Length: 401
Image 1 (tube, rainbow, N blue to C red):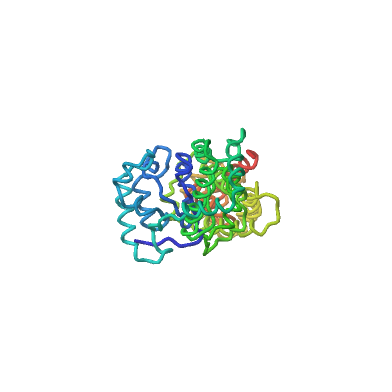
Image 2: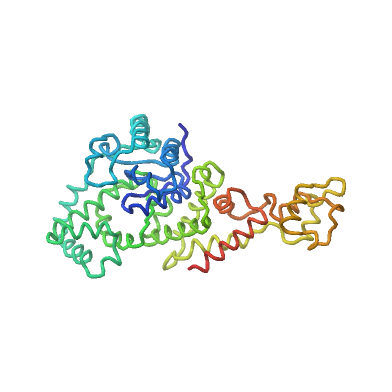
């Protein structure tokens, strides 16, 4: 067992988003250290849309890169899961047997050290009855908002499905919505963070509707991350932007999250996310929309490899001299860039040194910008050629708006 470094702890109630949530799972893992999931569905982890294999997911839980919180029955009782009315609840032995074993193994550890946490039994049911009874104005507020003709534009699908079931019972609807909100916040609090991934922008409107409920609840958040200063709407925008950046960096490639989390890029990205959230939380702007992409582009553009070919040739790393011809590098350069005709050098006069190869993109080069972006996109640190390719990707990202 190894423990992931706690740099930027995030939380996601992932099954609320169905298959789309699991299609983004590898991206949430990449940006978090660690990612805490509420009662994940092993069946959806095994679905074709999820980039992780069953074994990769178990390995990430075992390493502490992914943490899990759930009710004891969900984590340990196979019969209960298999008889659950939700199809996604079914037990997958390769995943769920391992999770159950880890939960029992870690049960005596401090909360933040457990890879799998068996959550306390819910208190939302009794709290909701009392709170709605004391605040009857919530009944028409919630009922009218969730059953409005344009409700589908502002609220998550799962919430609207609940509203439909309670369409003839306004009080019951308010109690159920408040109960779910309370339990959701209790899960976030127990995860040790207040930085949830909100994968649907419509969820932010729902959270704003329930802000008064959250202010009145007895849920205590500890170890609050800097992003707690952001509103729920800003968190939804932040989530959308981060996932958009990673999709563009993938650019059709199947980035292996298993390899990425073992690289330095994972911690670099987690630190970058933490610092970005701290900065955005202090920024006095109406919205964080566009901020993540703009900051990444600004950092990329303000950093550099080498300024010019003359600067390269003044560097002793660039030229070795005729006695030290680096034939392999020459062959690569001639075949891909025909650089000798461009710079007027004869193929035997000078060998290509480290600095020249770095500038042309055939070796890693010193770079002060966000290295995590190169490692995520290409699996390697910055070089001249990768710099040019990433520049094109970021230009496309900015223009896709």
